[in-house]
Amino acid sequence: MAEIVRMPKLSDTMTEGVVAEWHKKVGDRVKSGELLAEIETDKATMEFESFQDGVLLHIGVEKGKSAPIDSILAILGAEGEDIKGLLAAEMEAAPKTAAPEPVKAAEPTAAPVATPAPQPTISNQPTASPAPQASISSSQPAISSDGRVLASPLAKKLAEEKGIDLRRVKGSGDGGRIIKRDVDAQQGGAAAWAPVQQEAWRDEPVSQMRKTIARRLGESKFTAPHFYLTMRIDMGAMVDARKAINEVASAKVSFNDIIIKACAAALKQHPAVNASWRGDFIRYNSHVHIGVAVAVEEGLLVPVVRYADTKTLSQIATEVRDMAKKAHDKKLQPQDWEGNTFTVSNLGMFGIEEFTAIINPPDACIMAIGGIVEEPVVKNGQVIPGHTMRVTLSCDHRVVDGAKGSEFLQTFKKLMENPVLLLGMGSI
Image 1 (cartoon, rainbow, N blue to C red):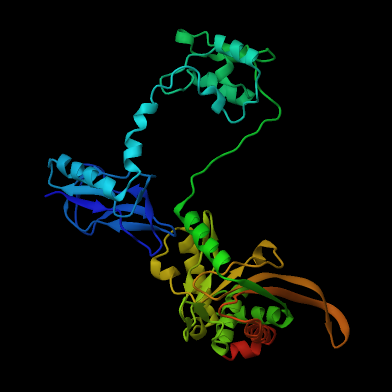
Image 2 (image 1 turned 180 degrees about the horizontal axis):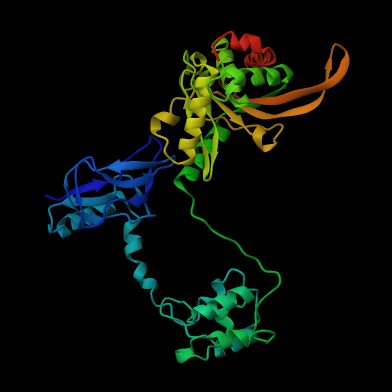
């Protein structure tokens, strides 16, 4: 008997999924546990395996298209089985859960789009007076039933190169088709329409990841009362310490890895910062799971270094590097991004010296890390060359007060300026 395979909920924040790739086509036999499709969620692209055996009889969501969770992804059954009744039953049930569906079914009434109505929809067409419009309609080129101007491939290429609007070119080919000589005739002619300056834009649909980023950070910014604490840290000793560390470390250690380790150590001393607002209560975490913001093409992902206070610098370095690669390849799994208790966002590698970050729920704080800058510093009453780094702690005032946040930063600063204290808490 045919069974419906529904769009799965692959993350706690997922409301709809996009089919990134089908690994089977209609008519293929599918075994339980076999890869059926790849589905893009709001955070990653995940492999989806079949839970039953059968022949793929129907694909409900084409590649590149989105659908809400629990909608029909596919139908599996016996070869040649009739699934019309199953689809009809789903269509009948659809209005009960999705009111917009009948509106979409009524769209064919918009079919009678005859005449040259598409003209005003050209985004870069300047406002024209009635007289020129009349002359345009008299030289209207042949247009196909779907609204496309009929032109040869060569004519299209030449028109694109010369900035000529084919909708204003009269074709001399069969049936009014525009050919090369028609485009050539527009050079310098009155019918040529190639403005030197024109408005142009490009619209792109919002990805599932960007939708989630917008929703979660919007909620964070407008519900959590943020305040910010900025501190300058002398990085001279740590610059030298990192060189020594990388001479003996099993993995190359970055400044960001050291910052994660220092944050974890400071959080163990200041559990009031390692907390989150839960509405009716505040949760103070004994464990330290540090989220590390990673920029990807479509936005921002925050994989989590779990129990960061118990790991060596080499372990942190390896883990962060591996998770960053998985994030860029869209291979992160839910367990990779869930459970953070504190977040670090570092833009120093982009030349940013100082910035503020929006708190990453459910954390009470996020630390924004600027770049290490070579500048004069004062030591023992003398001005000497030095290296400094500015960090800004964004705090949720419902959980963390100014004094608590400042105490945490002082401990973090002490650890970063005295590498021996940090290295004493864990091996390299």
